[in-house]
Image (tube, rainbow, N blue to C red):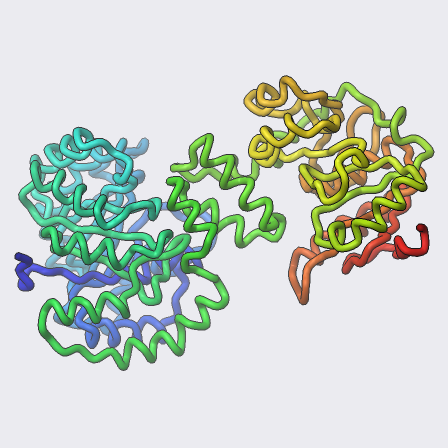
Amino acid sequence: MLNMNNLNFLDCTLRDGGYYNAWDFSSELINDYLTAMQAAGVNAIELGFRSLNNKGFKGACAFTSDEFLRNLPLPKNITIGVMLNASELVGDIQQEEVLAKLFPVFASESPVDLVRIASHLHEFEQALPAVTWLKERGYQVGFNLMQIADCSQQQVKALARLANNYPLDALYFADSMGSMSPEQAAQIVGWLRSEWQGALGIHTHNNLGLALSNTLKALEHGVTWVDSTVTGMGRGPGNAMTEELAIEIAELRDQKVNLVPLMGLIRKYFRPMKEAYGWGTNPYYYLAGKYGIHPTYIQEMLNDSRYSEEDVLAVIEHLRVEGGKKFSLNTLDAARHFYHGEPQGQWSPQALFAGRDVLLLGTGPGVEQHRPALESYIRQAKPLVLALNTQSGIAPELIDIRVACHPVRLLADCDAHTKLPQPLITPYSMLPEDVRHALVDKEVLDFGLNVQVDTFEFNETYCTIPTSLVMAYAFALASSGKAKRLLLAGFDGYEGEDPRNFEMNKIIKSYTQTANTTPLLAILPTRYDVNKQSIYGEV
């Protein structure tokens, strides 16, 4: 039975939520937040990170210095916490030197009561001595074990045994990928408890919509430290919501709390921020949780206009197969890193393209909507039909060739490409080995590329383009191949003020202002700034 006297309800909004706004919270928000937390029954607040890393602009809650905290109206009856990343304790600088810089005074002289250390599994043992150092200076110390959901029973127990050697106040486990079910949460509590007799905590993510359920299940099984954030604000899909957990905790404690300040805080600050930044679960985060993919991949793609819905799903499929538990911007933005230096290519498009009209099939809904007219035009006029990626909106026998250039997308689409009958134009000799290997049985035409901002250049066996988007690669192909015209179908564009329209038009403008380009002509509806005619005037 849970002893309510030992229950610690911790809100970490200003720490976890800072991934969206660079930890730059206004003093007015923080003051109202402190009032709301006290009224809602929260008894510990984590006001940010404590860090020596200072790259790029970050607000005060990325460092949460004692000086900053002393200027806040901190409630007397709430534990004040900060978080430290274990990666700063296991680097080149000696651990005690890092700790002395981060915590220069004893807890009795600092506004900070609690220090939590967020640790990947491989950092845990090496970072643990920091517990003793901090405890000797009077701080409460918690350790948050990240990415524990996929560990075996033996691994979890081994970690718990290591913790027994140090005077920890709380051993947390975090559902970093948001992939955990309530049953798994209970199971991990049991594994930890078999080796660790101290206080346990849980930090949940909401990919599958189970953050609150997992928290409550862990409480049933003896966890006494629980986390949440206001509106769930946190990296990726966010966390258990403080406004919901506060209701559940109050019921467990059989106490009345005042949620009016919290609801006012949400209305005034957090609802507008959520609309602006878009945290919270959605089908992409759900898939990431299901497949154990780091949610930052999804967050980065949703904030990047280069990624269409189809692109996001393709990247998720690639990471499902190849593994995406550790976020890497290089993995996500692979093309920008693979296509640098001297471009290589072995094939010239002139034999196929020279003097011909080329019909370029995009992925917009216009292709399906106007399919009969397109197919009739192709049969009559016999243009060279070039399809982007795996676009299959018309009869397959009418597509002559396909074009693709993004390594992540290529790997995700690899099975589909091997089954499609058309040859594939791609910068084959510049692709990573795993992509080349996956295409080994495919007829590939190797046309190289280099990515250079604001630049289009056309050479016999390679091109230079301003972006890794396949549309730009196809434009360059037509010009290198000396095509007569490039007819666009399925380039519908995006509704309203979608920033992707701006990006695509920027590419189009750069292309049309370059010498020796092939004329562009849209023959289906488009929002892009190109010359337009109707397919129905051609058939």
